[in-house]
Length: 203
Image (cartoon, rainbow, N blue to C red):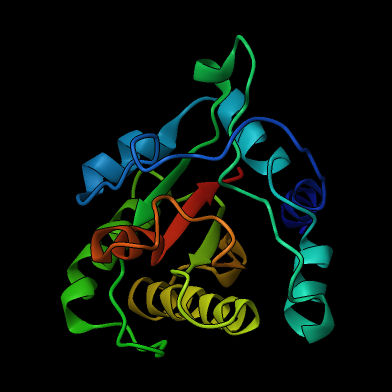
């Protein structure tokens, strides 16, 4: 319990630093070993990943209150912008999980990729805690996309819990909607990159 409360306290910290990640900076590993290599990291990186997450209560309030839906959430797509950026860059990866349009049902062709994450999270990363961050492209309203990103990230979390018996406290869902695109939404390729789930290690 103390370990979990510690992580939740870290998530509540607001640190505005660095620049938005680009598609080139964010890794999209597809095998268990690639996932482990990308998320193992150092203790400094684990702390950085936690501290660079926007206040969780503010994010949930934004999700719950449609009047606040035009406010942006800036979170795990931030990286440290100083001379030690390479050493302290947060541990996060992207996963291009496929969903039907306007749906939070995971497509069958994404199950193999999620199983690689499940194997990593129950293997070498079995003691780690992660934020499961949902992102969408720019189609639809900001409010709708925030809700959709919440549902899709939750669907990914539930798949991992059901298939791999992962403790739900190790997977903390945060919706980001359309607020943090990796690429332009003007092309199909850009939209595909923006419709993603990110896993950020916080411990």
